[in-house]
Length: 124
Image (cartoon, rainbow, N blue to C red):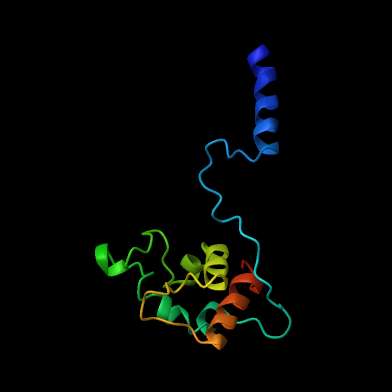
């Protein structure tokens, strides 16, 4: 019985100090970039920048063709992109995606559009 009482206390302590209790990384736990959600919010199909993202982040690519993109990060469907909308917003706003060493760049308008979608769209 003492183990049963200790477990909730251990969980509470882990949560209070920021432990994940083995639930994986908290990569999805990013602060949203400063994006205004006023006006028209683009749909996935309207975000032209995804054409550039799928150069690496496509379910049809494997191995080195992915240029180190994680195999579970595929943006060739709305559902695939929505599953990673927090990471997309964070990586684009930080200038980490597309990778600076790649020959792929986003225009300011494309960056604004993808950020608005990622932060403001329903499910985003």
